[in-house]
Image 1 (cartoon, rainbow, N blue to C red):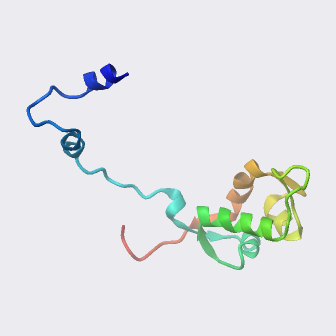
Image 2: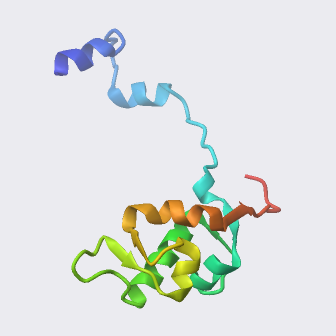
Image 3: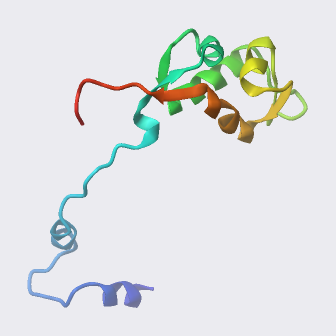
Length: 120
């Protein structure tokens, strides 16, 4: 394995170090990803998220899971299944949902991005 790594490095020079090699690549540009932007929420999802009108996608997921745990909505025999109450039924669309399908069920309730005044 080490032979392969060494063959990928540039030819050895006097005073060559891995730190110098890493610095020579230059700084990487950072992109703004969708999950860091703030989005408007539908009234149904806003009710589940504590009345907040806009949140990031990750914050929405945390709020929904907080609501599920606070109201003890996970099935006792299989914690991967969420049993929806009245508020959650409006968002999820059914009386039960699997934990891996929550993101897909939330998606239609996350509306357009909120425009921020500061530039990134």
